[in-house]
Length: 172
Length: 285
Image 1 (cartoon, each protein chain N blue to C red):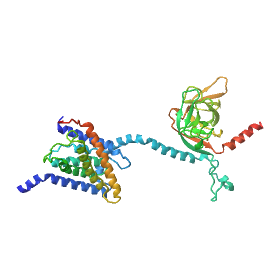
Image 2 (cartoon, each protein chain N blue to C red):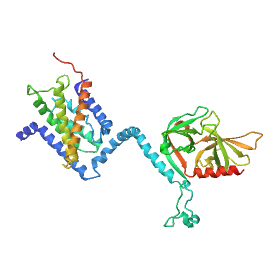
Image 3 (cartoon, chains in turn yellow, cyan):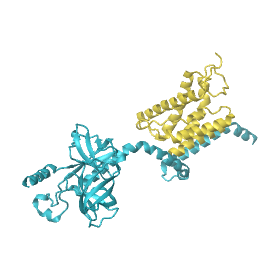
């Protein structure tokens, strides 16, 4: 299977998982993990930026259609894609300018993956929740929703990554 | 012109981003303002089959909760039934001051009271069949209270501990209840014979009566245990011994004893009074 097929299949599987299972999980009444973000995490970095945005928009819109929140996920996904290369660059220790490899468990150590995944899902969750709530009333509850959801999403995404991506150490 | 094209080519992704974000914002503002949003109507075609499938599965996880609500509602409806009261809305009785309230309405005197319970043990294939329910003396259960299911008669409470009770099932040779067959309106006795857990026998019905298969058998209410008019079953077979002048009717039970979960225990609030009267009657004989 070539790279494009793998990506398309991954998108379909994760969106199906999100729509059929994770949209119906309401832990403590407000935790609703966004596992489909994993597909955007693993989207190759060397495709045109405009295509990336279009993919993010379409992905978010599919989730939106099922949650009846038109535009919220789509907007958050696009911000996610926008931030992705900058955050990767900021977190890289040796500051390689053109890092075209998607960070996966085999390539990066666990702490790096944890911080990266946490910050990325946090950015997505902030945009999403703020657009959904659209007010600063009861801000402490909004913050709670943002952090709880971020932690849960991060946990699930890291679990899926470490389960399904083989982690062979390259040069030890 | 070429400058413009070069600019577009260079910043195409920025324009894409801004354009799509504007589209998002338009959609968000629309969902906030209008209830009948056009995209929502269009996408319903796509989403509703998926959602229906999803919810048909999710529903299975909520059945126990929903069952509780339904049991509660059934209990309220059962308790409100007209047949549970000694005096119903009767204008003649209403005139007597003792039976009316300050507004002249008939005071209703309750005779039967229902409680719900769950079955925790049940046999149907033994010679003497019992059930156990998860309510006992602490919940007000006493021996000789009747036990009903949503479908019909189940049995009679025989023994009570603090939190549990034993119920003699209708599928027990000692459980004989008084019943009448409708529409002939003839009294008889229901008893069970070892073997078939789906049928009981109604005896002492005179043979001259016109009784058909499919006639319903209801409790008579004369035993002070069962309220009157509770369905026992329907007649499935008529038979008669050549020497006897009484029919034996096979009754297909309304209650499916294989699948009993929730039962209703019925208390007769005037049982002691009625029993005392009955025992006086016997002493006179």
